[in-house]
Length: 177
Image (cartoon, rainbow, N blue to C red):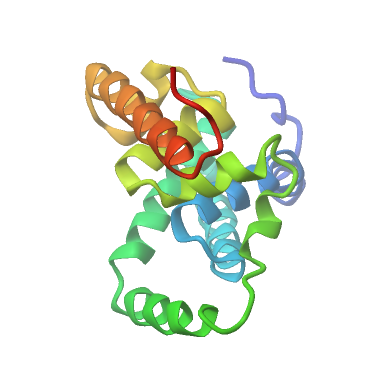
């Protein structure tokens, strides 16, 4: 695989990666964490780690796949953290009285309603749908990234689409046959 940034120094390469993939990293982090500020913090962590590990990148995957893997792992760390769990509960109660602006991060997606329903899915379905449809990764790439069997990816993708359809039908957004 040819490195498109092979003639750049570390700082230039980091800038190139941030310009090329920064929005993807933030959107992906937001789909996991559902908070704009936290997604931005994770993106910053991802690019710091990227800078630190840049010399060990072996071109075995694309830069995009590498950054997505770092983002997914960092988001999972945050979701497991005590701080996140307490912050999530606090924000839940605040959002009951203050309108949420969280969805501004995904406002450029084709259909905001579908994006909202995707965010309501459990993480195992949400991550598959986001990686497959919004990050344009293949079944095999998702399988490698999440370190799960390709058939598991296919099953979760199918079930995630079913749950999404049921959610949209339940709201009366689409009509069943």
